[in-house]
Image (cartoon, rainbow, N blue to C red; front, side, top):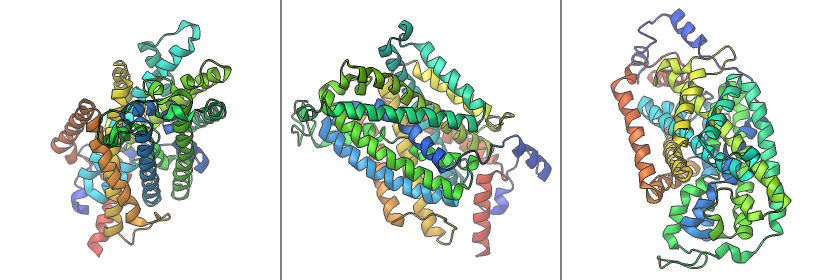
Length: 479
């Protein structure tokens, strides 16, 4: 889009600088609230619940062998993805994250498509986690509490409330909960080593599928079917760049934070997958609501891990609420979605961007179908990864001189690999649960229809993401 066309889109039909300044003043985030360590904590926080629950359903799709191979492939994809996003976030530090990158590379349509896919992922993931929180609460038997709608409601109300108090406070609480969750994983790992039995890894009877064996009981296709569950080990780590506008020195700290988070998650993924399955059995763990606890049996360590596991689930639930609010904030501020959603309160927290997806997520959690919701979140994530990696490649080719304080090792070869695996992952979501994937595809299509008919004519030219694009267009015109 050329600069002239860009600036035909403005706020509420008013083109004056004063009006635009007033508009953006109501939509300001609190800058300088996080350094790289808090961002690394945020990245781990997004994902750590995936170590405690959800991944294990992949054992029922691919067996230990299928899930292990899928996990290696997906870990490599995420590491390549993170290296690509580290470059993009250093070059374009804004609250839009993946949407900002795609907006610069692929134009308004590509930017909105990417932001929508991310929004689907982040709005649905907390609903899935809420159902896992319910299962953990019930297993703890705290005051006779049973899994129910009011557990989900309490989780949403409390943690959205903390976010409304401001990002600095929220990130510190999040960091503390995440540290506790990591301690829980260490306690689990130390105890599970004593329960290790290699025979448990392959206790699912082989089927008659092509390539079936003790290691791959569901054959070669089982590896593909296990991919969405392997993604749960890392899902949402790509949300770290969403904190760019609230970070001190984002060009340096966002890449450091996201790479540090991914390094920790590689270790926790390997430890949890191998030790849980070897201690509890692949067959038994494939249907468990809280696999780490059940793998340890009835001892005191199991009770400790059960309580701390709840902290792990809460950490991811808490942090993904942050992620969806920033993605929705950025899309709304730029006019892609209704602009009322990006207004911030006096603590610089986007109120409606926190509350509206929370209400939607709460309604979805009432289904109680954690596995279905997990697959829906994975569909949105995998689609966004495809678009973000295309964005990296396009910007490398089209804008080689663009300022990049951090450069991805391997360049487009690295992100090309991530793109290929992400495309396979999108197809795998249809293989595992065609209903979940089709629902998400339908919602995605409705968002794109809204953009086509209405919001593309009402973009806010002076929002940071649109200005990035306008500057790029101006440079192109000069050349």
